[in-house]
Amino acid sequence: MSFPGWGAGPWGASPWGGGMGGGSFAVIGCFAPAENIIRILFTQVPYYSEILDKYDASDVSHYSIAPRPGTMGYDGYDVRVVIPVQAIISLEVPNAIDVYLDRPMSPYPAQYTFSFTDIASSGLSPIPDASFVVAGVYRKLQPQHEDLVMPTSDLANPQTLSSVQASGLGTAFPSEVVPGVFVVDDSGDYALETGIQTVKKRILRRGVTDKGAFAHLPRNYGVGLLSACKKLGIPSVRQKYAADYQSQILQEPEVTACTVTALQDPSVPSLVHFVILAKTNIGTTLSFDHPLDIVKGVSMAQLSSTPVPG
Image 1 (cartoon, one colour):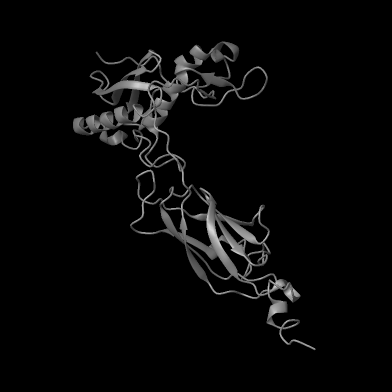
Image 2 (cartoon, rainbow, N blue to C red; image 1 turned 90 degrees about the vertical axis):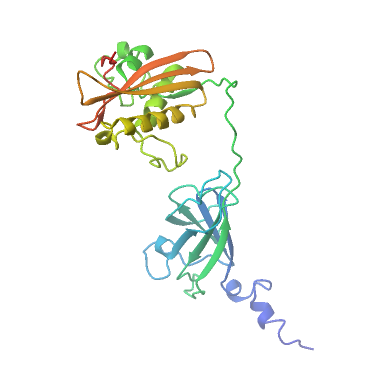
């Protein structure tokens, strides 16, 4: 007795029966396995030639992603715009494509609309274009605690001459250590710096960095003093940037109190000084000057001999 349909019929050719070709090629769905990855699951390995022909799944032009209006991340910010930059066969799931993004997506419950076009099976059988709603990855944000003292270290990249001298690097490498560049220790590896100099370096970095310049940091990170140099001759603008600088410095985990005062040098009108006074959670006080040449548009923090106007 024979039973049509159970052998070479639809059941035998389906993924359940494991028939010829493993069944039809289709998309199962997609999700975010990491903050900067969208994974698309298929019933089979898709066509992946890496020569950018019509159905090549490695071609990032086949993918698009857009924030869903009205959604917001756990961090309280609007959904961040991201762009696909690479598509590869997943190292974890063979019949999946991992689409890498240029930066992390906003955390859950932010949502994105992810779409793909011109995807086909290894036998060049195309499937319809599709769109999916993808949620960002959940990320718990840890609040900063002023009473939590943590040892910090960073690659030695001294921003001032005093930092070079304080680290001892200037004695070991007097002709090689230049403020603003990475240096090496006597083993030939990158040198590390610890303690208060790393805090001072991060404060100066906040001052000169434009807002949003670092994709992996919050959108409001950075004061943007270099971009605003030409405007700092206006007293109201100076005070606005000084207030923002002060607010930024207070976000450093070691800083418990801070004041920033903006002064125009009476003897050199082209210089504006941001005088910084900060107290850390281990009782250390930082007091230094961050001068800027508002005509040339440069930070002069490396010139530790620059006097603070009285």
